[in-house]
Length: 138
Image (cartoon, rainbow, N blue to C red; front, side, top):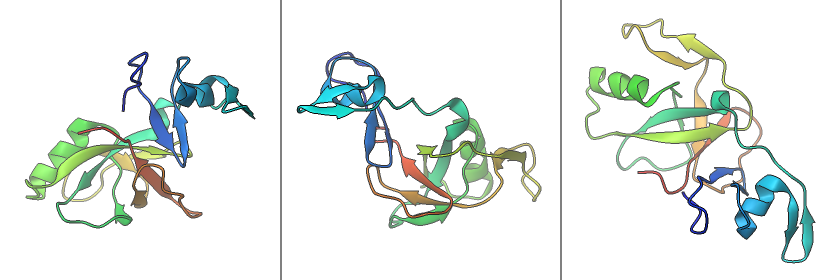
């Protein structure tokens, strides 16, 4: 999702919107006052806290999925597994992913070292390996 004021990208991590301008949502990124309350600064997810999942059509969230390092890795895995109706979607995690090369029949793909529970943007995730879809992404 892009900020309507500055057009910078916002990311949802848990229930926090992260951005980078004077828009109230962006104040969560820089720290400041939102609706009269002081908000501590939060950093934008690092590159190793972002990944891609392949969501099958009609799949209810939360669900468990592999997390891929790049969109190209997600698309290649999707195509090789015959999931042509599935859609690669960007996600963010609260912790850096531990990337590993694929070890199964599909070689040459980089993915996270375990399955992750995928939640919608802004949904409070339980403890354990979880990611959130990035809101507003196709």
